[in-house]
Amino acid sequence: RLEEDRMRLLKTLHDHDFRSARVEQARIISGTQGDIVHFDVNAGIRIRIELRGNTLFSKAQIFSLWPDESLSLSNGDFDRFERQIKEAYSLVGYPRVKITRVTRSIPNSTSEIVSLQIQEGPHIAIEHLFFDGAIGIPTKILQDNIRNMLHDAARNRMTPRISQFIDS
Image (tube, one colour):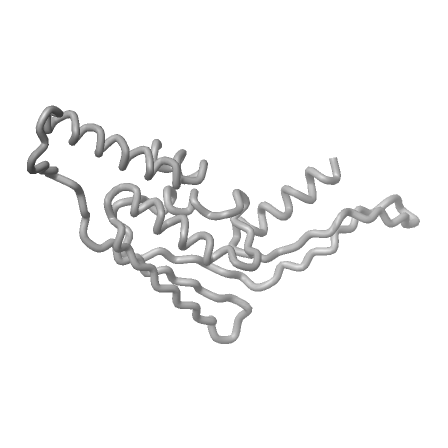
């Protein structure tokens, strides 16, 4: 039960943008009027993440790609998050997506805003495949096989979270 309370407290902190928060295991302190449950909490700084420029995917869809389900923050998470976003865009025909990260501190507070500016770029799709000199194999069969091969190659590059994201 205490572990559930600790995890609920940690989730509440993460939900309120304290993404690097840590909550230690509970300590029970005996007092004259009964036992006291004590959690050491290090909330850390408040980090709000803003997304700008995304039109293809909703913010909820993009945040579903965060490396940790709890939206906590550890070393390298932003880099992994940006790679996941780029991969998701690439798989639906936006291979030139660019993400610019700007971090700014809020004066007189322990808060930061991390803004991810997403430039989706142009949509790229293979519309026509031509095969000069294809004798013996109908062009339609060649086109279908290449499309299937490209689709399979893209699917094989996907992490399970990207696959789930694209299929939703």
